[in-house]
Image (cartoon, rainbow, N blue to C red; front, top):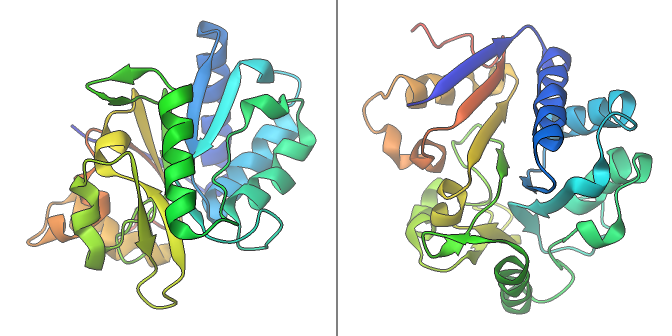
Length: 235
């Protein structure tokens, strides 16, 4: 069962997620989170840094990534660098709580290294590592993490993470698989912008062929949308 919440804009969505994270850290001694890249998480990170730097006990927060581009951590395309710039540099989270994907390695080594990290650092449930919070974005092509429609077979791979490739640039990426994504205790889709409206309508209204999109294969997520992304849900 999907849960959908629509906010007037990206800022209101970010404020809501800040309250979610504060609540989770108040109730638990450790919160493991798989982060997403993209413009919507950037707004979330800025909100967390501005409003929750001193409210949240960051020693309880353990950060991972749902996917990463195979670039060095100093590259402007790095999801890690975006998080570091907009969040990590502005809050007092211990360095040992941050588990980045080593995108500077070749793709096979990066996948192997990250799988070892996930198996070592996360508790297991259903035979797979389990995150407390899974943060996902959705591309306007319906991809999520770095599982794209043309490689949708990666979703059901038994591995914890896999090598993926952008359909146009052919850039290598490390991505969690569907089993690990769906194994998270809570899953949040953060989707904003009018360019996402068509795919959202297809997926949430279960239109013909909607399961060709990886984002449609996520179990029981909470969709946090801005009004632009949600504009066509009644169609």
